[in-house]
Each structure stands twice: as C-alpha cells, then as structure tokens.
Image (cartoon, rainbow, N blue to C red; front, side, top):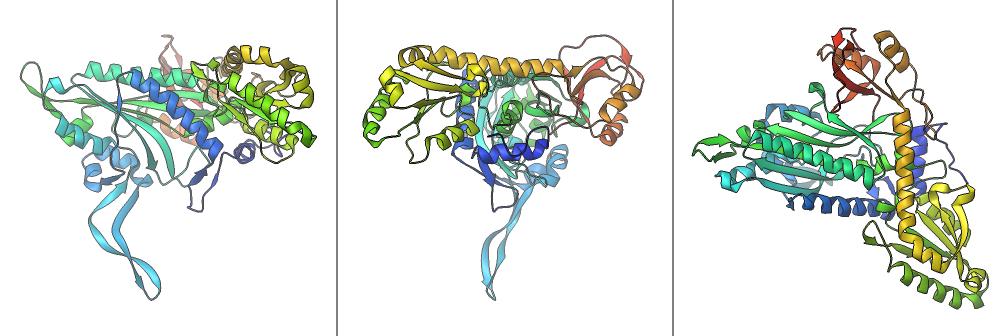
Length: 505
C-alpha cells in the first residue's frame, strides 16, 4: 500500500501526500496558512517539550511579548526593516463598519502596527527599560509564539504565512559573552536536531549576504533532505550593539562608564517537522523518530468474534499499564490503544502512514499465547520489521528497543549525508556541470545526482549574481575549516575559505 506518488516520481508531490495521508495538516481557507491536525501538532508539542527543557537547562526563562509591534520600532533599524519589508503584515485600522451592506475598514490607527515577523525590536525596547547596570546582566529569555511572514509560495510546515516557533533573546555586558551565547545556543540546536529528530546537520556561519537582517554574524545548522536539497533547520544570531544602539540599551559597567549592551537572538520553527518528513519518510508514508513521536507504541485490537472482545481488551489494558511503567529517552513510554470501530487492517495502515514507531496487533490467539504481533515502522516490508514476541519480553525490552530504532534512523540519515557531500569538485567548470543537473532522490545513502558540494569560495560580493543564476546558495561556512588553498568554485580566483554549496528549500 505504497503512496500514490513515490519520491523518485515527484518529490514535492510525494511530500504533500505524506502530510495528507499522515493526517498531519491541511491548507486553511485563510490563504497561505495551515491547519495543524492532532498528529502534526502532537509532533510540535513533543518538539516544544524536549527543546524547552534544553533551553531552560542553559539558564533561560520563558517570557511572552505582544504580537503587534509599532512600525516606528522597525524604522529605527534600517537593515532590519529592509530585510523583512516584503514579508510584513500591517494593521492600519482598528474596526470595521458596514456601508451599503459591505464591510469596510474604519478608524485608522495613529501608527500602523506590524504583526510580529520576529521580535528583536520590541524585546529590545523592554531590555532598554530593564537594564541600567552591569549587575542587571545577562538577561536570558525565550518565547514560544506564532509569527507572520507574508509568504507567496506556501508549503505545509516549510513555508506558511503564519507559523509557530521559539525565539530566544539575550542581552550581555561584553561582546565575548554574547558571541559565546550565540554559539552555545547553536550547539543546543545541533544536539536537539541530531538526538531528538535523528536529523544530522552541518554547523557553521552564514556568508555576509545570507545573514539575518541587522546581525553581525549568523550561525546555522543545515540538514540534507532525501532529494539532496538543504534545509536551514535553525539559526543563531550575534547582533552586536546594533539593536542596543537603536533601542538605547545602555548600562553602567564595572568602571562606572556607560556603554551599549550586546544582544543575541536565535530560533527554530515548525519547519523542523517538514525537515523530519523529508529526512525520514518513505514511499509508505511518514516515519517518526521515537523520541518525538506523540505515541511511541500503538496497539490495535484484532477482534473477529464479539465474544472475544472483553478478554482481548482486558489483556491490552494490562499490557498498556505494563508499558507505561517503562521508560525511553528518560520519559515514560507513550502508548495509544486504537479502539475505534473500524477494520483493524485499516487502523494498522493508518498508523503506519502516520509513522508511529511501533504498531502492535493483538487478537485472541495472542491472548492465548501471552504474546503479540509487533511491526516496527523503520523496518516495514523487511523480515525483521514484523515479529511475534511474548508480552513479558516486549515490555522488558521496549525502552532500549525504541532507543535503538532512534539510533538506526540517525545512522541512516548520517550515512546519506556523508555519502553525498562532494569534495572532489575543484574547478568552476566541473562545478557548473554538476549543478546543471536536476536534483534526484537519494536512496539508502547512495550518491545523489545533485546534493552538497564542499569547496572553496573567494568571498567576492560579485559571486552573489553567479549563485542566483545557478539557483544555488552557500549554506554555511563550516567551523571545521581545512586551511588549504584552492580555486574558488565560482570565479577560479585563489581562495582559502571552505563553504557548503547546495540547492535549498
């Protein structure tokens, strides 16, 4: 029961079908927006819970700021407003009136309000009131919120006009402390992506032309999707004193001198769900990493005779209680019993489509033998993916087994990433020929037709036009620079900087 469209046939269409068949989300009647359904929002809740704990472990606290931001706040920061100008949604009136049976806006606002595209400007205004002395610093805060960016080419989870995210904002007394914070939070994102999402990433710094508007430096984690394209999975920005100067965030330092503070910001969004889909899903549907699965084990009763119903359900209830005493990833096992009045085969396939890590089928014979049938999603269609096991063994092994499935998912994705970073392309001619090809889906770590290239870049601003004409981007300047010299893959000029080139989402 494979998807109607396979990855090889049409990757974008396959992606949309995975989201639909897994019942994760759908397009809203509000143009460019989405309705997140229970399974999709459940993934976001898991992402939020796990990441929120990691953020709080680093000393940050959760705040909440208004979603409406005065236009004047953006006008203070020219680079920032220029970077977001085309994406802003603007509130200009406060109410509607009816004229000739038609609703029309009325009561113009004295100052237009921007619907939050990001919160640097309004949070900086609060920082300016909260900070007066070095003793007030650092301030480390985080916000879980929705944001609006007027996306013209929406795609569920990847790009929608309204989406959910987490944004961290901090203020510091020194440049060194702020820069260290920026890198520290990038590492939190790397750890989360690899250990919770099983999605390996490359880490590095963005080139000048790809920086966050108003930032001194932007750092990022970049993931490879199964079609060889890159997905920016998270960013962390060192803002220097730029926002401090525009918002007047000053403090008296230890030498009793007044100076501007240093700020940072960093964030990830529901785009991570899109990344997990394109990193792990297959031609049978979604495959969810056990760590973030809303339900790690789904039990489907197989009731062929009504007289067997009571003992089967009692048996399942007892198993559910046993499983909930076990742990995986430091948390209790999350179990769902699907007791809906639907054919059992349909229910099993529905959970396979959703990507539940384990689907257990239990009928009268299983009750008689004190066993169950378990299907492990990542091994679907393979002999090891479907087995009969005793309840006692299943309950005892469930935690380590879920963690092993998570590790296998990461290993597969890591192998695919490593196998598809080209380092043997060393001339502009070979580089252009490589990216003249179209993207092709990657299977089980095999070489892609077009994926990532790690090569030299001279840093010349004129190369931006070359990149645009080739429809590729520099994803990051990796931290692990080789220090060698070679020809820039865009100009042929001598260069020492290593960068990652790719097509991207």
